[in-house]
Length: 310
Image (tube, rainbow, N blue to C red; front, side, top):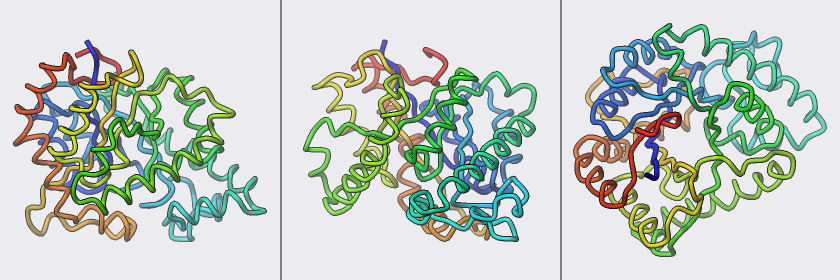
């Protein structure tokens, strides 16, 4: 049976985001999460995950663009300000890695990556250590070759599934769905990521990664988006053959003052998280979960974790 992994990013962003993600996990459709260790709510996230009756898969959500560095800021001055906050967004990080300081930047990125891996291992309760099965990066910064190599090496060493954000279009109808401008922007983002990935593919074997969906519909992975993906898969089959399929989400149920995000989150993350579209993704995983489960059953697809067939 084909496997599909609904994976929620940004676990650990804030207690209210954590609460929403755990509620979605209880809905039975989403069985995988990626954890920030650069934000103060990481321990709260893991405490909530350990209370779930049904196991979920866990992965490190490596980050260089939001929150605070795990390394001492003086050891990575190209990446972090003296207070520990990261200096860069996606585009400015790309510029840094094209500059004359790229070799030193790559060295500092390795320092911070190692620190986040250690922090992730330290935070994990003993009952969750065997749930770790994947690794990815915030804002897909691992499309940059130096970061691709770091994650790929860790994935090989620890036998983890690594996300490769190269999304198949499958059907032109996915792009022509309303709102058209939103999906046109998503397609443009896909082309930019593909361009960076082309360089990474020359030095890394990325062919075993799951088929990934989460760029064209990023920020609006609602029931309409998932239905369109499943309809395209039913007509064309899995473009990755036997590889699992990942559908990436960022669910959040807005419910009052406790949903205020910490200042450590980047401005882009605060705006993204507060979008009412987060509730559409939340509803997909709870309100529409039975509908999607029935569709998966008809297609012979099983909602699972990365390291489990069920």
